[in-house]
Image 1 (cartoon, rainbow, N blue to C red):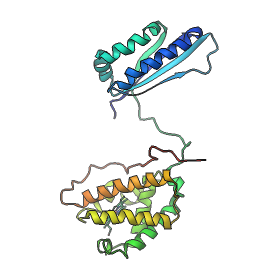
Image 2 (cartoon, rainbow, N blue to C red):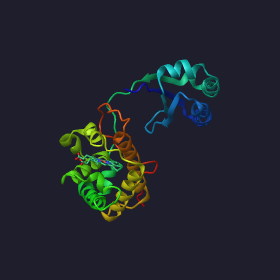
Image 3 (cartoon, rainbow, N blue to C red):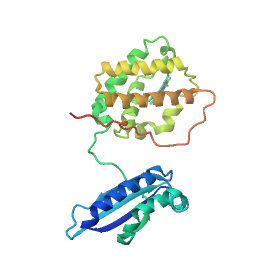
Length: 259
Ligand code: HEM
């Protein structure tokens, strides 16, 4: 569980002081942005206020309550912050720390990479095209000499789960630990890893996965990460990982483009 804490500060500001309040907070944001204890912050204005007051909520995520109280509040940055917002301290209605609970998530406004790719069928097409290439490849074919007929489908299920699809691999095959263990002792070399990366991109083209920049860069980021872990777990110094959930990959810095 994270040590992060969320501080909420609610203000009730007379409407005629609202613009100066906002200007003061625009300046006060600089020391907040510079504080190593501050994860992020956001000042929001209430849309529904009916009286002659502007209602604001400032949300600040701190690395921990202690970091906020013992670190930020005792730093010079806090003095700079307070200098800007001191005139509004009397307008504070609430100022408290809230600990996040396990109830959190994202909505469906952005499709998962799994949905964007085309769902289960797209991943089946991908791994089928991929292993056709693998079995003809000089560097990779020897590694997959004993390939089981269901292997390609298992990898399709794994990839689908990683990219936000159903948890079928975890439910039917045994999850993260099972997948990692399949690589133990394989001694995958860097040239083999790189070939795996190249072939899966060729297979993505052949299988008609979306070719847009946002999807492909997120896809490749996972492939880079996953293949480097596969090399590590296949090597002599691999330590079996603690059981953990299948990683969940998401869009990178760029969300899906919808023109
Ligand atoms: C993102 C990267 C990777 C993913 C997602 C992945 C996924 C998987 C999965 C899910 C399995 C288990 C299949 C099953 O349950 O039947 C597996 C097995 C295996 N993987 Fe990977 N893998 C990756 C990288 C690599 C690389 C880079 C290599 C070698 C160049 C490799 C070689 C193998 C081999 C040899 C097996 C065992 C096949 C067998 O059972 O005979 N993997 N992989």
